[in-house]
Length: 308
Image (cartoon, rainbow, N blue to C red; front, side, top):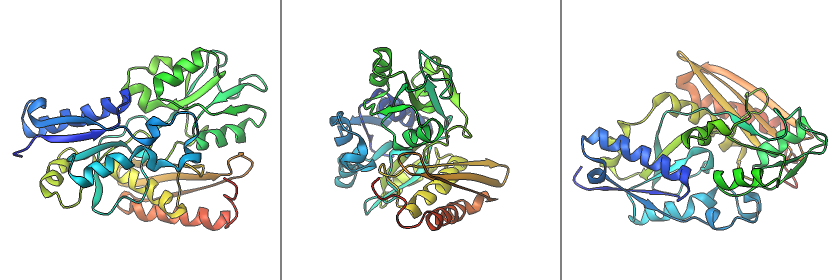
């Protein structure tokens, strides 16, 4: 590798932690000091600039990737680091993600100064979240609770909780763990309580499809099991044409050569929940995910997400 690789990322504390993790791994793979091997380039995205509205009102997941992917396509950066749960299933022409780091805890976390769980919150309590998936699952479990929009990075949301804007909030365990904030968690939520977002806890590295040199390098830091789990979950999402506008959840687990997964779709008000599961060879991950998505789509019918 004759050039110093420019790594594009959002500028939040969590995004920078993830980008520098990738930079460290690349430097080790090349046997070079980090500052000689890589340069981290911060790119502000639409999703970072607009903080007063839910993502679903603004256009969905691409809000956190558009400007970064434009820089990658134009050659302003050599690769991009993303939280895979933020990634649309269809990438721009000429770009590919075939490198994922080992997945961190995919569960959601419950945070509250007033209760130890969603079920123990007082009747009518306020839960803050910007995720339609989390909001729908909260409403399905506790229709009496008030769910309010809660935008901003992790630190901002924790401050809002401390300021009493809401009685509880929900965040990803992975992000809190990476930021050294796991002690802020009141309780992790098991997948049985709340099924996570597709690819939650996984970090992906996007590159130009034509860049063979970068492809060879990224293959050396790719975590194969995580890649298969993410492939299954994202295949389900792709069939459902999912975005931030539709509450969709999925989690794949691999034990030995076998993969098992659960997938779920909900109406935004939580009144309807459709769930399925699959099990098979891990090598068939994407096919299993597609099959689960097809079943959910068939059972939901064309009107399931109307008004979402």
